[in-house]
Image 1 (cartoon, rainbow, N blue to C red):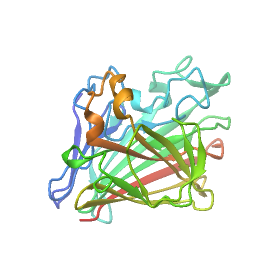
Image 2: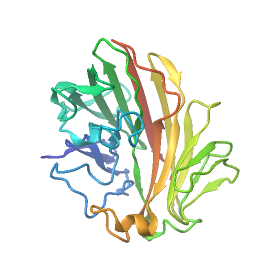
Image 3: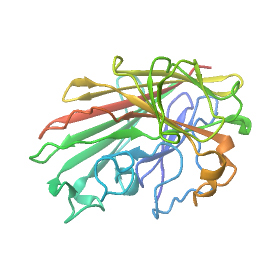
Amino acid sequence: MNEVTIIHSSGAEATVHPFGATLTSYKTRTGREILFVSSLAKRDGSKAIRGGIPLVFPQFGQELDIEMRSHGFLRCNLWKSNNMYEDKSGAACCDFTLSLKNVVEGRNGKWSMKNTDIDCEVVLTVKVTAYAIQTILNIHNTGNVNFDFQALFHTYYRVEGGKALSKSVCNVQGLVGYSVEDKVTKNKYIQTDEDVFVDKEVDRIYVNPSKAELDLVLSTAASSKIQIQAKAFIDEVQANVSVVIWNPFIEKSKKLSDFDDDEYHNMICVEPGLLREVPSLEPSKTAVFEQIISDLN
């Protein structure tokens, strides 16, 4: 399976693997790699690629359908890449499409939830500019029934120098006031500290019901900052974007067959998502979910 490389005139570039339409690389105009991919990641289609930006849909974990694989099926199917083009702003772009009739999931070629067959088409647009990369996920309900869903950009960021556990090097800012669901400790609380960092296994959902859009700053090196923005619209009505922060730490890393035992030092996941109180998608309607990663250096 040949990967697709999208190159901007500035020298910035992104690489997308057709299996899962997974972004496996984003290099800034200076050549600095932003994304992390495990050295043990499978790229032969045998399983989802561990790293980059896997797409999560129609569920996170198995919260909506216990019979469906964890994190859904977008990241585990072969997508079609279309011709590259330049949009009006000068961004280098490429669209990737997946029709449910081509999905290896569910019954009779359809996605079934609660014994109801569901049809949809999904398009991922990747746009690269001199200073940023934008990923836009369009989910169109082509069936005749409403369906509930969740979606995430499961983004793995590369932390330079193997210093993911250094608070001064690797931290996330912009989450003060968010409600936190800690999936490790099962605790719930309000975020009060400005910096979110890794000092143990981290698997938390951050939700802000009073602010729809996400706007964070991530530090991945002593002098390197990245802005992460995300927003979503369901049938043109804005929906709240949550975010998951994840690092497997010591023991969890040992249980992942496609992740080296020590690679937790090299990464942090910051995953914008539609996770809580997501409106159902009605027939013929579309959900649009986008993330922008900007180099602030």
